[in-house]
Image (cartoon, rainbow, N blue to C red):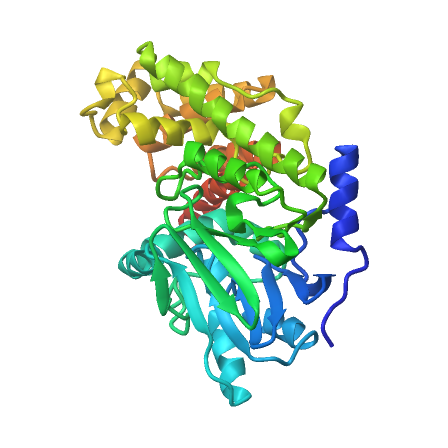
Length: 438
């Protein structure tokens, strides 16, 4: 039996927006389906599926990820047995396309034709890039999501055969700027805007006055800075949000988190997200135009703390500091204006020289521990990295490093920071295990 919601998602989003208080889980991944309008349903999963019923079958936005594609299809089939006429990809991230094989398998089992798969032109180059960087992307996923998925009882190992699942459906129809579809009497207007990705589609469904924004709205601070992924586009993202608002939608159905009903609530979400991204871009560019270095900009640019407490803007996945770095990369390149780091010495040589000047690696490690006690985790991480780079086989140094990064992880809020610091601690624990295993 398909799971059902104990709290209606529209009621949840209305309460969160009206009160401004996030006092319960917002992004729910239980694969449960809710009907939110006549012939409109959302399945809240690792990424949501949004389904529209038409006179000629279903039109679905996204297929969720490979770990829960089958569960999403099961929930969908508890709502409708109609064939899936069209599958629209909001973009090519694996949590949106990786479950598409389950839709194809369902169609084959029912003797129905496979769905038409629609996406932006850049989805196909994305898939090709995923195949070219398969090992790298598996490493990123283990680092970014490993600890979180293990807590949920889901394993991530180095044995996954493919980052992009082999049964994932590739687009069979693509478009470049804008497109429209009419399926079974229901019209869909497709719009391309850069934002989290360069292949992003958001849709306007006029008869429902509904926006399907994909990951341009995700109920956390915009994923516009991810330190392990390719370029993001914060200003273009903000412009897309303002274009959505100009349509005066009454229903917003994002790819993560609950749908939103009501013109004023939707405007509040769209416009505050846009303003936050525009603020980061304008402040960063102003300082770049004055000749400031990346480090100076990182110490100067920020958003009001109260903005980041809004339930749809909390930095629990990405965070503004990372967005600033991506703005710098987009407009200024990779060099941070430190001339020593234009063509730097190898890290091991620099670390060895500094450690020798400072009295040895153990001195650096002890000082790093003192800094942890004083609450300066950032500086502690720098010192322990210098110590370990100078003596990478030392189990005692890796013990200190593991403890420091475990403390750093505990102090962080965003999943990206937590994942990277958790991975650093795990790396050092592995060194210790190898050194102590007979």
